[in-house]
Length: 74
Image (cartoon, rainbow, N blue to C red; front, side, top):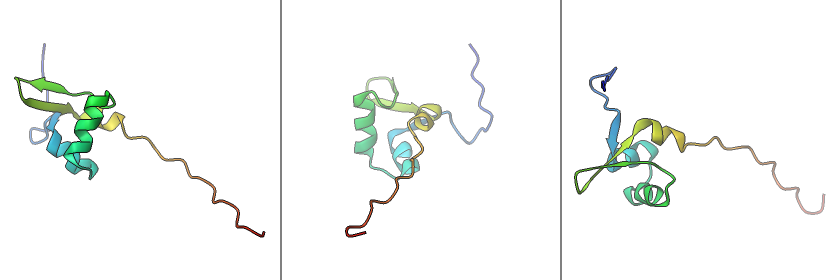
């Protein structure tokens, strides 16, 4: 098994804190996504949690534009 990192300064695994910072959300929200099974993560040892960058990218979904509701009386 080989492990290759293309950018030595960018790890393929990030912490819960780093994931929250990248998405501009709280750590609590990231942990909720993990607990609900919406975001996959791995446990390192008994306490450390790491998230693969690809898993983080997979949860991002493009928003579809919603047509504005018609105004009343028109």
